[in-house]
Image (cartoon, rainbow, N blue to C red; front, side, top):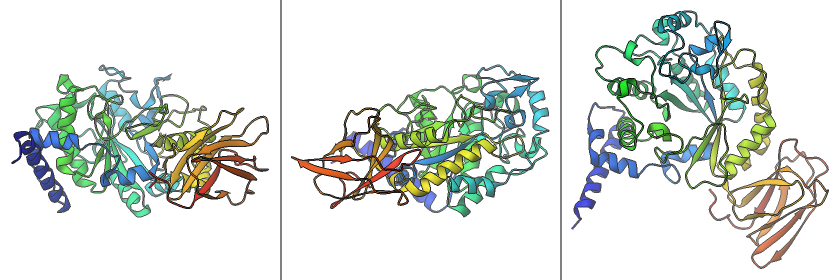
Length: 469
């Protein structure tokens, strides 16, 4: 006989199973099952994306694209001749009080007409860069919806001359080109109290209605990237109980959607399915899956800044991608499209470099996992990272010993059969190996020609590497 506690969890899992069945039938029925404490508890205890099928695409993808696009793009970071930082928060600048009065922001929206927006070109550039998924801002902190909504007229169809469903066009194009489609949604909303339809008596009801619209209308959403802790009239707080509630509500609509840690207490919490550090790399291999999100400029501007010159070096971004992969996570590069609806020439140049590198070396990134069996040795100026997949371990050498000596390392394997470079246009470097106990000691001579960003050395073994995909 089951104990009462086990009965409690069994009941919760039965309800979760019912929700999966409803989703499989393509029905988003109006129900309040998500308010049931057993459902919330079962769903919450099953969160995460380390081993489950729901997160398999995410773990394999490794490299994604973030797009911050909205009315703020029209301003490019400037208001009345003054530069504001961060550009995407120009309406409120991180404060509850609006820096730009709402009527004046509406006037900006009335000018927002990104005539050069081309969903096909955006997705093509992302795909060519080797980015496997796309996250687009459906509503940022300004509360402005970039899709047609019945919840407010504070949206792209009602307030702008552009009058196109940016989210629909991108969702459809992602499906055509094989890119996973994901959406950003800001829980916090500086304008909701003034713009939400009168049918909504509370902000949580307004928020849930918008999330339901997104999941109903854009059927191929695989992830919801939540953000922000500023709430309307203190009707929502960033605590675990609200995180559980929101997590369960979204899964009542689609149990397959991944949800980040900002569903409640934020980027330093264990809420949601995975962690989302901004503009910083994890210090070591992480127990929890993570996704580093980074601006394409060396600051905290996620929206486009007119005249920006501080774009990041593509080589550094490649190293960041390698670093994140070697520590068990993903790397996401942000772009803020211009007022005309285009990626800046600087961002396009970054994408081309990264895409070219990944076209040659992607085998060591996509689907790869950390390789802790590699034992790095301390050498003069040398640096490398290690990933593994199948029967292979990949060394990502970003710098060789400055004294000209061989790169040396030990691997807890004894069945090495081959060493080669992933870039077959480069000569295979001379190497030697010696087995001592259960360790293979390897010395690799610096190749005559190396990759300017990272030279990938493929170590092939007789048997599948333990713990690899």
